Length: 378
Image (tube, rainbow, N blue to C red; front, side, top):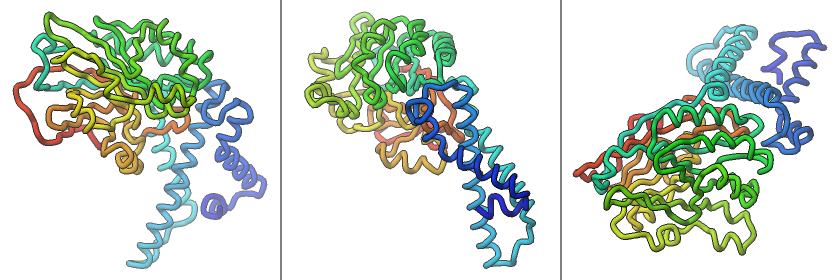
């Protein structure tokens, strides 16, 4: 604690106040649990959640930069010569860096998602679907800190893109279904020519998804639970399959065994020759998807790695995927970094929330090598 407080040589009462404030912020999840009923999804005013999240993020960066500065000074002093910085200058430098990075990392709490247009050249795409427009949303995470006003803005932006179809790849909400139904209500205003299709994410199964099924149906969202929908243009067919998340195992065994993710069940009785699209929350199972002739997989889950330091770890647990476009032979995977933000870890550094517009284009070329879009891994 000396590096954080003692160098400023403050009066004892002020030192105690700073120490108490620091402890309060560090115990954020305990306060949320005590007064809001849940550590990650407290039912308290969003303004209180925002203030606590900002303070926690600032403390996180302050501690990180403090340790980094200490290590850098120590190494430099051993190799070259001692650095003659006053304690006040150290504290000011660390504070400025912490505030700057807190602003950068939490701006998505206040800004609408960025719209990214991605043109996809696909070899097996029927000519009738050339130019087909899919708006891809993922990880909306409606919660006490992301109410219906934020969902309304997302719907407004999605509708402005004039999609042929809207696809949502899971993690719609956090919290009790009876509370989140109101926050998700704006999704009923999503407009597209062929409808709104979605798959479950892991968070649905943390929050009693069975009680939300009727809500999604009333919102006009076609939930694909190891099943598919068929879209037709002339004689050509597009088969949009949706597969459940692995977190279904949190449910009772009899339910989980019937709804465990299965590509065989997803495309069971699907007409042959149709262009297959797969909605699956996690950007994994690429080999299985190729085996089942999937040509386009849409996923989310990773939140873009949240920040540079964590991206390597996120890729490790998701078959090397973080966000953006990946190609494997005639299969294209688009990994959306999240349209919303989970309130449990409200931090995004150099990773904006995103609404993706995928424009499908017919191509006669097959790229047999894995490709990434320019934005992947930035």
